[in-house]
Amino acid sequence: MSIIWKGVNDTGKNWRHVYKLTFLGIDLGLTVLEYLVANGSERVIDEIKEHSYQITTLSEFEYIDRTGRDQENNVRKKSQSLVALVNDKEKIQEVREKAVAN
Image 1: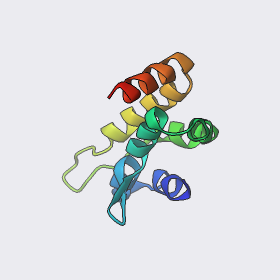
Image 2 (image 1 turned 180 degrees about the horizontal axis):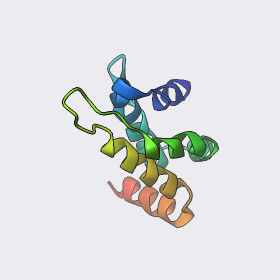
Image 3 (image 1 turned 60 degrees about the vertical axis):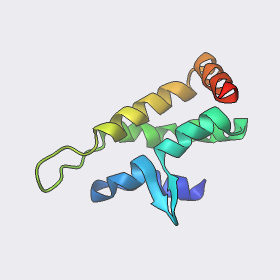
């Protein structure tokens, strides 16, 4: 989890670390946190709630590449979605039930 939080706190040109951190061939970051809400222990959900401020700040994440393209729309949307998810017990239950069914 400490590696995930380190990746989530990355900035600028390292936007891929935030969205889908690749570390030793393992994808981490918001994508993994979203997966852990659906498939992980209840403790993971509690830890995500504890770090919700860090995730919320990503809703303002910006990085414009050399060509002038905004590369961070996915980070902003996923961070907002993740915070909304962990704050909605019914939605968490729905996501976890769907994960079990799959």
